[in-house]
Length: 458
Image (cartoon, rainbow, N blue to C red; front, side, top):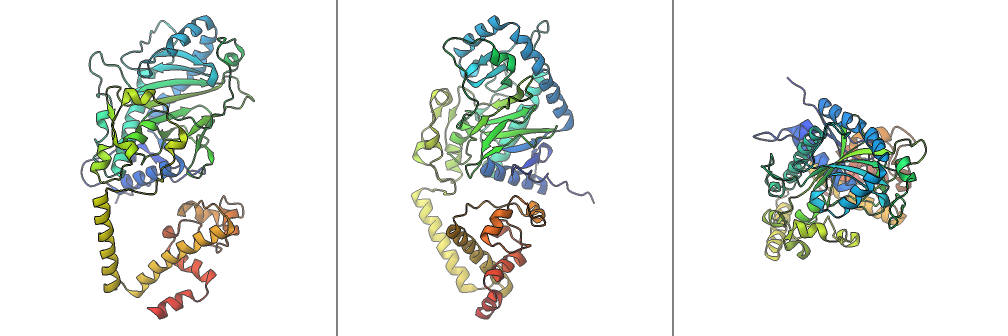
């Protein structure tokens, strides 16, 4: 018997780490590792707006080699500042889907080299970052794999979003919409040099940066990328990246295509100046929709999802990229509320009502099962009631890591557990994730004799 490899558990920041090999779909019934990995992927994206993807060792080594060439390349560019400024002004006037080569953005304190297949020519006689075509291929494959896993989690056909992507491979004379950017933030010699008169250096803290991508994959050489989670807290998202890991987060195009069901990541980059000799370098692959494609919610509507009016009109990608997208409007939607068309909503409501009436009339469940279900229902109500009275903002752990937290006095959830009066030796997780004995133990801690009273009722 061959033991199934279980995906790597959540890291301390709450962002899940998923193996690329576990997300590769195969024919037939999905295996347990695939389903578990897709579940971890979607949960991490919904709660933390990011997920860590673990690549194969040989692919990760090639990305690392590409990243190591960045300091040498950007230091070389500082010796040709006049050339760099000319390229910068030229790049500022180019379309989003035609950027290529070196350019600088003093407002973001960032230098970038964009590699775009079909447009970027790498001249071996000139110094340029190494292995960019191979890195593009590796990250493009990974991005498509994550995108297919998301369509599976949304109960859509795997190819539902393929009409937005470039042909694989590109045809003759086609230019890639997706791009691989080698970036360098806050390089000291770049910050010290004079810039164009109409540009000024700004702070590195940008509270609401959003990528207009479908997905963005980041491979940095040092931490510095902060992402806002579901509770509005900033997470240092790339602090736990291993040598084989890349960080993945969704962008505005995917948000639009899924009618708001996959939220885009709010992010910022903060690079400390202490001991900062070469700045912070990173590889950023941006999976972009084709410029001639159209973003619409037809796939979501066909799958039965409720779609708000603002998502119902199709938008050409070229127009979408030129529009501004205020953050307060993007996040006004209640992601937990699933809206359905009037007829379908009425039908669903009637079906649920009938199901409740049938289950209550039959009462075919054994007493032990009814006790567990009742314990789960009452427990959820109890937790919310106690939290509201104490003014606590709830943030639960996952079951596995929390079993380690309860053995220490300085666990990440210890303060909340104490303030809530959570029973000792019971993991601080969502009520429906608790083992049956722990559900009943929690209720017994607040209402001694609760189990016996429920059994007497039954």
